[in-house]
Image 1 (cartoon, rainbow, N blue to C red):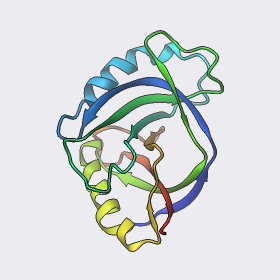
Image 2 (cartoon, helix red, strand yellow):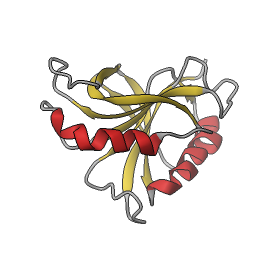
Image 3 (spheres, rainbow, N blue to C red):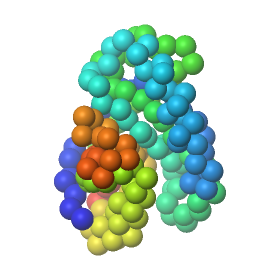
Image 4 (cartoon, rainbow, N blue to C red):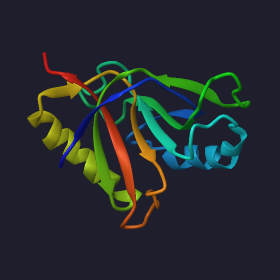
Length: 160
């Protein structure tokens, strides 16, 4: 698995979030509540969708699939001047990311994440940083289609 190392400049997002764990996955419900209202966000940069995870500091130090984190469904916006009711803003700070392409149905995304965290990351010169993790779904994303593609962005920093 190959990664592109990219410097992300700050992004402003608007969307909805929920608290969940890997054992109690609420991603489907979150997106079902967000997608019908996405049109209310008037200042979107493009049509890309962002699926984000905001983990508590040190979340991966002693991984526990029952620990909770914030899961977001969002779009990137030009500014945070107008936020629709029952939605919130999130800013992804500037930082270094390892970017991977997941090819295949969304239901098999866990295989790509597993490879990233058990093979690529331990053998790289990087460690996970405490910034949001996210996937970008653009026109290549086709949900359960075997030809679907999405970008997976993992925040990284140099190993101490």
